[in-house]
Length: 248
Image (cartoon, rainbow, N blue to C red; front, top):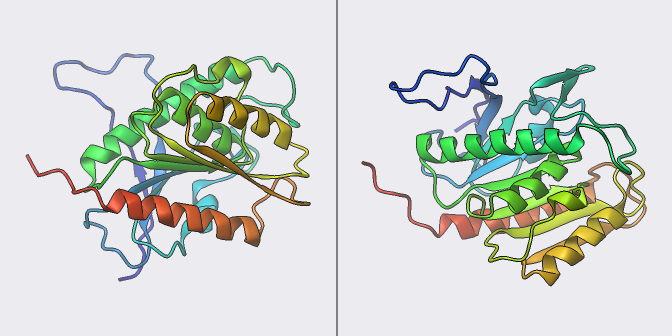
C-alpha cells in the first residue's frame, strides 16, 4: 500500500465541560505517514520526529520515509515562522553559552510535544510507548522530552542535540533508552556538550550511548542516517512486542 502523507491539525485536548482558555496556544500541525507499506489504520509503534531550525515537517519527514520496519511517523511543525521554515524556540547559532528565552522556549515546546505524543498514543492504534527523534532543535527537544517525560517515551534518538545544564535530569529511575548521534566537527552544537550530557545520564543510571561521526558537521550524512535507521528499527521492533491496548 502506498505511503500516505497527511497534514493534520491536533484537536485541542479538552473536555466538553472545560472550554479552551483564551490564551491557550494554538494546536500543533503535523505530517503523518506510515512506513514499510503499513496500513494507516494498523496498530503500529509511533515515532515522533522533530525538525530543526528553519526546517519543515514535509522535508524532515523524508529522512524516515524509507525506514525498513512498519511504524507510524508523526512530524510536528514548530509554531514560529523562521525564514522558509519554522522554529521551536528562540536561539542563536552557534548554540553556546546562556541565551535569553532558550530554556523557557525548550520547556514550552517540550510540554506541547509530550501532550501531542500522549494524545496520538490514544487516538491512533498504537503499540508500545512512543519513540522520539529529532535533529538540531529537534535533537535538543528529544533530549528534553526524555529528561522531563521518561514515562512517556520508550526511546529517544537525538541527532546533533544537547541541553542546558539546568535541564539535565536528576538521579531517578529513567525508563527511556537514549541513543544519540553527533558529528565531531559540528560547529553549531558542539559534540562536547552532548558528551557532557551523556556522561551525566550514564552516571545517573540511564541506558544512554552517543555515536560520534568523524569529520561530520551539523548534518545527517548517509552514514549517520544508516545508524539512525538501525537504532530506530531496533526501537520499533521492541515496541512491536507490546500488545496493543484493548478497545474500550
